[in-house]
Length: 380
Figure 1 (cartoon, rainbow, N blue to C red):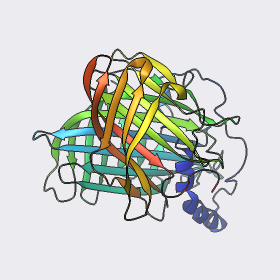
Figure 2: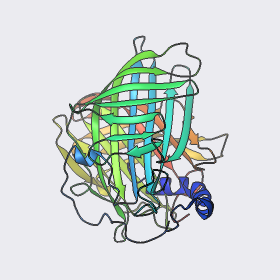
Figure 3: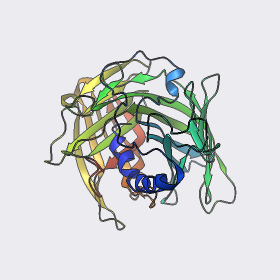
């Protein structure tokens, strides 16, 4: 993801307070702020499918799925299914016990129903326990209660989630190989040592399956395109950083574009902000901050939080002759999560049109906006 460590850390603030209190009675680990976590400071030797799995030597990790779907009638949907792991201790206090906590797991699930103008979301948190949550280390196999993401031997990924009238059951097939962001997968988030993550994506996943939103009698068959991000590291945003804007776009000529802007509280962008352009054949190139031009065309104000978010963008990559304008499918795609996580951010499906090379193209994808309804920079 983009730069999501601070999102996770802020999300866990309330939960960690409860865990600290609980530890007095249940023998849970108390070294929440201990040292020893591995830092993302140098490039790594990537190995797949191993690196689709968990990296418990790093403190924070997330698996991020988003996608744009349509049913047989052409009705359009977007979805987000996200899993987070946060390490409380390098070692569980009692490794022989399935109840001894080392990590906590969170998940966010959202569906955008463009034809009805609806947006539905839920979130949840759990410790590992006996089968409650977890992430394998040898391949992608993560779940939080009955929400899951699992990779099969043939490389396909199955997503399953259901709660309160929302259902998602998808098979995702990679159309391009994994793409490494930053410098060979080392994605800088700021100037300080270790202020980085290891970051890669499947930018082009063919999606097929079923989906249901509240009010539907039965799930409907859907198909479309998905995007997957995985990041892991042990650092977070600095006190000077307010949040970020992240774009994951599919262009109809086969190109994919990822951009993230790290916003500072003084109104400037962190110089480590960057992007990646993926060509139709799966080859990619790094985009520095100076290679990208983004103009905000309008804003939307949340009635729930009074957060004022960008709501339309013109994005240009002159060196690649890309010039597209994108807008949300639904204005309100703001997640105001429950007391167990306690954060607010906007993440939603977008589409638009423009040019790529000398061709007219359509665009679709996802945008994430944090720090517009409260800063996400710094410590708890």
